[in-house]
Amino acid sequence: MTVLAVQFSEDQAEAYDAVTDALRHSGIDLDDALLMPPREAGSGVMAVIGKAGSGKTLLLAELYKALENAGVDVVSGDYEGRKRKDRRTLAILAPTNKAASVLRNRGVPATTIHRILYTPVYDPEYEKIAEWLAGSGPRPEVEGLTDASLDRAFAFYQNNKSIPGALAAAGLRGSDFITGWKRREEPLDIGFIDESSMLDERQFSDLQEIFPSLFLFGDPAQLAPVNQSGSMVFDQLKGPRKLELSRVHRQSDDSPILDLAHALADESLTFQDFEDMVQDKARQDDRVVWAQRVESDLMARSPVLCWRNVTRIKLINAFRNAYGAPEDELMDGEPLICDGIELPMKHRKKRLDLEARGLIKGAQVVYLGPGRKPGFSRLHVIGAEDPQVSAASIVKIEKPDEEEPLIPYAARMGATFLHGAAVTIHKAQGSQWENVQVFAPDLFVANRMNRTEAGQPLWKRLAYVAITRAEKRLFWVVRNRLAKPSGLLRVDDLNVAPTALTLTSEELE
Image 1 (cartoon, rainbow, N blue to C red):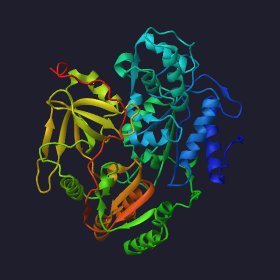
Image 2: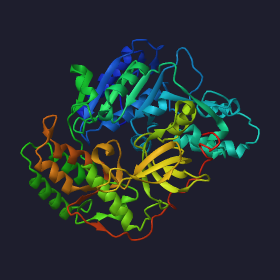
Image 3: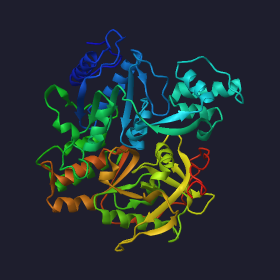
Image 4: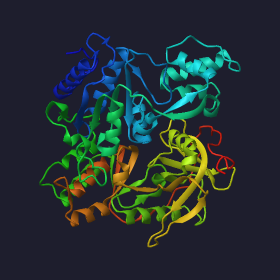
């Protein structure tokens, strides 16, 4: 077995060796750091599954380090070097920006699945900088950029492995060095897909076309994609193609949140038993809070998680009322969720530009104020590497007991948004926040309805997903009440300089 810098458990070590063996069959020998030219057949599809705390992310990170040390090029989605016939590549992907940012915060250069489908076209002058940063070219001399600017770019890239971020550190904007976007025409090599429980069959099929060697990392206890009959794409894998991490690793601080999540596996556990357990944990540890009301202050950065859509809409309107938001406009600092992009085919390039900047369905956004043109909004895309953008927007605010939403801002076409102060637990999959509020009355309703999914009570799957979204603190909200905000909504903590407009009114004519 490969000598590793970290101490693996027995099941982690077995999974590592199984993946290593599959990579060896595709021409990558991690033991000897030996790379052979890519093989068309690759190693097929393999899954590493396990519940929260079982060490999936650690395993993924160690495999990434071993592949990079062996000389495999990491494809980030924001730049690709010149193609070589014998080049071996790795892309680490997640279904959402937030999920990808969770990996990036742990030192793993992840990007979104969508981002890898479309590649940027760089201006040749600035591509020299990208080649230098990626280690495939000499330090360039670029007109208009000083040595100090290049040094800033290099220092940024050493810590963040982001070409656009490094060029921004040198004083450039995306519109300076990216001239357009193109759909990927050639397949890649090795794909690591995190949060693969969120994949639907179509996404899985697309990924199989791109990656001859595809490795899925997922949690079988999460909720399956909507309209997929409670199954996940890795369920169809059998035998040695599906590796399960069964041991749950205690964190150094003995996480009470993980304790609660794994208690849900007890078949005899009732909803009342579980709430008693939550209350006991709250008495013992301040990282679990038995909350009598929803905290409106927290909703501005991390949405309340609920089950029913009607609850989501009520919570959103309660949040807006608490902050005194006018009915016909947004306040700076209100959270939004991207619901897609409404652009005709003739604006395909602009659609790709917006999506590449992170405005894909499900992206979390903070409203920063109106743009320069009517119907435009300045936005901060949570988890995106280049987060601030101005775009034509269609904002929809749903109202209780009303079929049609209120639309305070609407361009004729552009990115569409729903309010993001509350989201359903299904939509929250793949995301994590420091503080998470779970609206327990909704889970009580799911319990009373006796609904099941994949043979397990639905309330338990909902509770498991909701709880494991919390990184540091869990608020289990037991009353249908909302605390008054302690102050005004803020945007000063989002202090990244905004980029130029992504779409202009002239371009939409």
